[in-house]
Length: 440
Image (cartoon, rainbow, N blue to C red; front, top):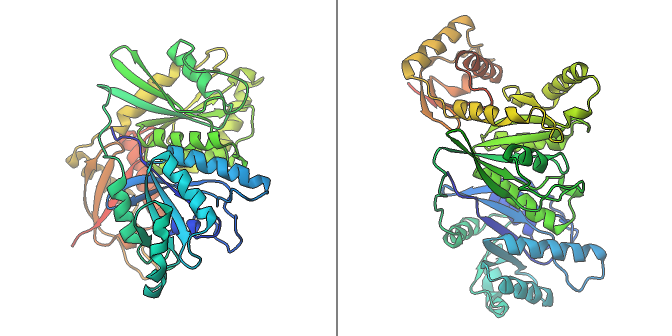
């Protein structure tokens, strides 16, 4: 079982290029970048990878402790929490302006938290920009590192330095035979109540106030000869609505819980309209390639269950088209109805998540699928030709597919193969990964 991902926080005063650096490290434009100081108000999270090492990257709002604007107090609080949670802090300053009083104040906060840190002097677009670097030593964070987030100068060197500061990627001790389940959902959907029902004891604080659970809490239980580790995480909100700094801390912990889980139990409130946030949480699980079980909670409030179930199933397919393979359970944490089905469903999904298929059986089935429906030709009249397939991994099931040219594949045909694979072998609740390889 992999350990939780480490956290790298980017901090600094407004308009020094933190969001540009965030985007540069990710290799894509995820944070909004503008010349208006203070545009990034909420912390922004994303998973990054360098040289095979994964970590959570956090972009924070610009700190200006002297500003009278009320939003600055919130940004300052959020950044304090980011530094508290971070394993490595990246303080970004501006090469064109030299160290400012605000830079000294932010550097003092970084030093006070005692985290590993790097001092990045941004906007050092060419060698001439490095002439004034020596004055940044006064910030007390060691050797200044010149970078240009806009042009990518020095970004690889920075990432190499970051990897050297991350804690050792030690393997987390895994409970023998244990299945780790991250319990995710919007605030106040009943996650803690469901965990309490499963555990049979009041192990979590349950309250009607959204966001009561502030941290991720592991609860290990045994059912028969099987061990389960339930990770009850804080409710996640859409980023623009999250303003309390403690909730940001919770989001980081939820992402860590997801990174070290086998499965996700996504809890959805049937009394509330399906939301994009529900879909986003499900997409996070899919992106992380985790098995998933959907629990529709508060089923005791539904007056016409048969009609409601049909409407929910129809809405589910519209909102979660990528999760048609996920088992859905209707439960009531209040009465306990249906909660007894959750662990058996998770165990069944885990079985599919770790399923292996013999190469001979796989190829016989694959060629039968190909004979039934031939791959379509490309616009240029090219046809993909399949040679053979073999399973190369589990958690999730991963298949190397050898073809003449993967570029000739149509996405709808890949979807057809996945659908038929599920009909043939199961894989309920588990993603399937196709690794297309070109072969002569």
